[in-house]
Length: 336
Image (cartoon, rainbow, N blue to C red):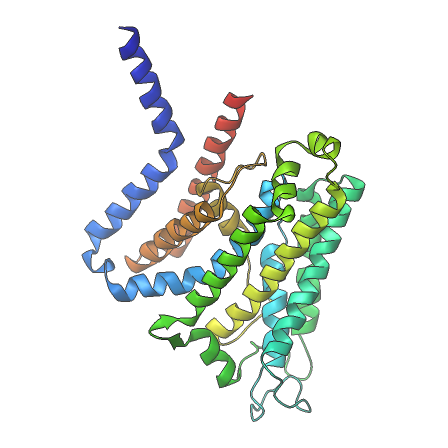
């Protein structure tokens, strides 16, 4: 009798811990039932390509979540990087070139530039959070507004006004959306970034300090961890990833506006939580984040594929986020 009761308790616990996966699986099954053609190699390739920039963004936010923080400015930072890189990577003969007197730059130059710009924003976020103990939610929400305003000022340039920045260099767009040995270049970029992040998180002092800060900040200080430096580095590294993702996003779409990247941070946070990153800090893995992004992207793509109203898709995504966070907080409460 006691064993049966214990088994029921274990089963109930397993169900609660994996409820979000079960719901997402049921939703995926529904999509396949309604539109069996969804299961095709073309769709799978499209999902992987679209997931690539989201994976890079999520890996940046994931590190911040592991420290017990958050970053609401991520999406707008991606937008800033997309707009600036697009403005510097337009074809020389494009009629509405933002900088007509500048010849086509080597592709690496604008990409490195936007990565540095967004990394500086990350440093500011991390420094304010760590040095002045301002909640990350407040700091990054304020930075989100500042970055959006700055991007909009840059984007609304005379004499063309707020038109999408297009006419990107073919060399750049092909580098982003092309294929190498039949593998999408975007996927290759995502795999390279994934390998770098996994190494940093699992094989370096940077990663050990990151988990230590998120697990117990006071204990980390006692252990000799420089919390201020650790947080600044985590936010800075996230900025580097946002900058790179923004440049890739501009190349993927073929243009950029001041609304590029809007709400990307919420998708990334939700994907991280679905993939096992705890909002309480100290818990999370690179494979888990990637799985979370892929699950979320499959659902997004699937809902659009079967023609679900875009506004209804927002409702579904919102419910997924609420459920994922509720389950995460329940786990944390039980542990305490």
